[in-house]
Image (cartoon, rainbow, N blue to C red; front, top):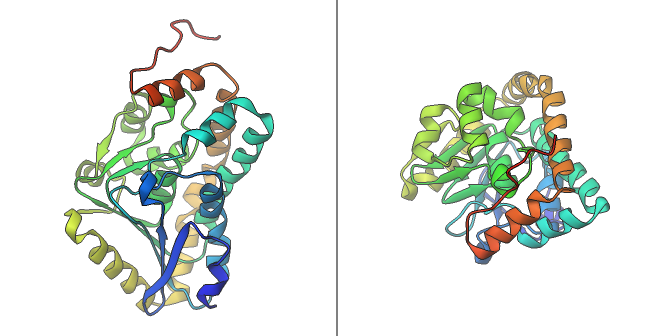
Length: 270
């Protein structure tokens, strides 16, 4: 399959840096690779094309600029607070982003630098071998915005770092450095930032040089752990979308824009 097959995903640069390796580069550095509506859709849908690409034996997911991804952009969040249709569509896309990576037959290496938040973090951590710069900053970000952690966290954080650590970081919106993420088990490796791209490409190249069926079927079998957590993920994502219909996300969004702490209601809704 030629790179022309990926022309439907203009926010993602595609190239082949080594035989059998497809590199996907998030390409909105001017906005810290925040995901607008088009970019979010592309990041969800591209994995179906990758799955059918017989020339690709391994994938390297990375990002251009200082940050891996600042998450969903403010305009996307605003629309989610205003429109049932937007929430229903985002539920589908966010579901597809996770499940399409889980079900993509090709092994995926992610290279995480700078900030990694929201849907960008979801793609990075659901990848098969996440590699982070030691000084990277990983934060789920959902509760800070005022919605449940639904993008990916419930399906994979407890499996990677245990329930106690998952609750601590997700409920408190506590950031994790790349170095700490390796210690917790959230990522496979943490390396110095200047070594990140070279190391991630080397790992992807090793995967591409291995036995394709053995590697792909091992990935499929291991990802049954994630498939078993599917109902947990589905519930978390539905609750995230439900949260966007309430008042908290508007206050969360306003606080981000005004660069202040949020002032959420001091009384529970139920």
